[in-house]
Image (cartoon, rainbow, N blue to C red):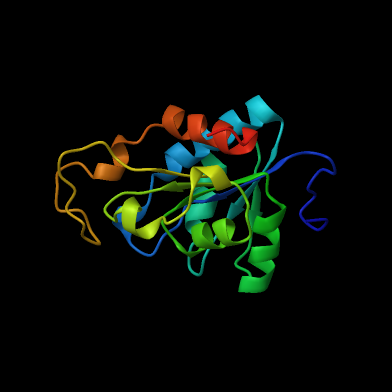
Length: 172
């Protein structure tokens, strides 16, 4: 964190815009808007975590923002776990880092598209873990969406902000 110029005493909020399936990824534009709002509302340092091969995605988030986030290069699992553990809240698509955040008891917001949050997010709001899934009648459940509009695109930034505030406040 010292190498990345994280400000001592500021809240650290982690974001993971990547996922193993394209259909599980909330847009980088929405992650950028979310990050800017969190900086404006909480004066936080934003860490953009990336998995292998996701450097372009992390850079797209940063390039779209009006503020400057801290892009965290791909790290071994122990180091990324330590970073996630330092976060006031961690927002992630349905992916490994989301589960790491819940495991180390970092308040977590999981964003779901085609995978079922009721199966893949076995965490509790009483532990400051929240999931958001699209409110659509049909979701294809595929790696690449077969519908004209991906179900995950219906999730708005305001909905995620609401859950981030709940997670940070510790109030279900």
